[in-house]
Image (cartoon, rainbow, N blue to C red; front, side, top):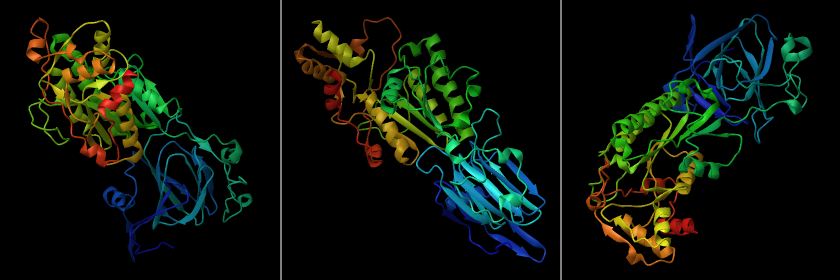
Length: 468
């Protein structure tokens, strides 16, 4: 008997992410009507915006038809169009809830959201039962499935009609007991650009667990035409894009301009489309070079971008593309320091070799250590604040490059007065190569990421630790 007049409500179950919903059904002497999936209303009621791509119907003639227990690597929205079922769900995902069971009778006034990896089974309680399910991925022989025997003693499902009295397929009869089930692993996080200084910091921070996959440019090139088909993207929950063309001055040349746009824009466009099409959270690292540096005071996340050079223009264009992804974090950084050659190591080397450098003193900002970026990325992904742009640099008083060089000299036991401050114009006056314009002010306001619960490390503390 269909329940009429219910309000749209969503109830959590003992299985994390398995959500039981009451649906409004409107009926009269002619029959009834319901909205089986209405994205706006149902997301507002607490159901996930899971992006279904296929709708399937399983029609069952007789009472007692029993199917399952199947766990697929996609989400399902299960309902009944006619008839009534006894449904059973068993968590077959890796983790502490593995083996948890939930059962319920479902008629047309109810539906249930079944998250990826939760085993699904049902038994018909009325003849002519139409079992309907929407899924958010297309079937694939390459996908990872898991199964559980309907008669498993550990799950101990109390079937209304004994399994000995119903028709069950040979395949369902052959499924393993819980002790022999292969759990469905969590969706993976893909870190692109793993060979760069930020990629190496992310690898050190996240570690080598199976859920993290690291790829360098040789393995996965965003600008390659084959990139969109390079992975089964539904297996990924998150992509962290640590890859970028960062040769700021070379980007001003004809060859460099093409390479910068290919990596920072064309490749990012392909990445953004993949994230949109597959419901992936995209983390993208941006730069202070999207600003012209003329603002008095700190740059906030809402300030308009005004890039000066090609590199800044490509980063701003990439940011605009990433912002179209429903689940995105754009992390805007400045003056990045990590493994490999960088400003701090160069100054330490010059100090040690007795060279007195000329260093720019009309550009102001804060260093951002890659370890801080990695920690900030993890914080955003674990706490899930509002999606959008977040500034992230070291904290403390802003300094010029010359002031930072003096700090490096002092920290390594050398005389800071050996550092000679010069203007940007004077510094580059002797070079005949193309030089990209630099923002004079690169100071990023950190209030938003602090409000999200992350505390950026003080620049001077990070600098001292970095120099050892």
